[in-house]
Length: 170
Image (cartoon, rainbow, N blue to C red; front, side, top):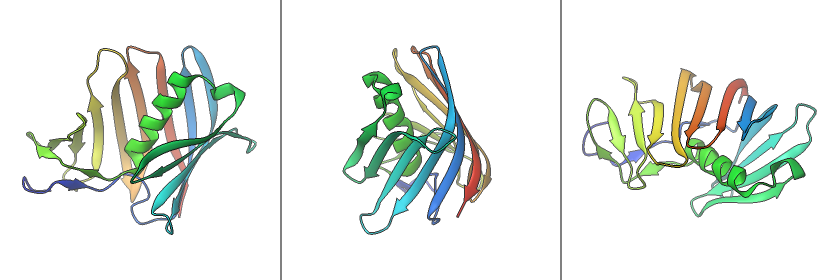
């Protein structure tokens, strides 16, 4: 990406139709493991994002499009409003393209919403950061093979972290 570009492709799917990740989440001292399915909706130009238990029960479901991200469904385990907002933010960073970027230095770009994107030599997003007193975010995206195979989220100021490991990509 050169200094004049102002667009960055979302790190997930990269032309594919779906990705399935094994997920481990710590939410305010409670631990959860399950599956995260991200599926492209080509007709609506959006993404269905489903967090489910390992046996396939839907825990929460989001729909992300150019209009933003919307919670469609949440089980009793994910009724906490703060957890829902944090998950929505984390998921939207993975599926939404980024525009209005300003080059900083050494392959670091800043969005108009205050996120810093770190890129590798291939132009893939390897890190996303946003500094805030409460709920600052640090995401590491690793081991790209079309899309990142490993994603680690850590939020500062609150006890929330999420780890994703790619199981299937098509």
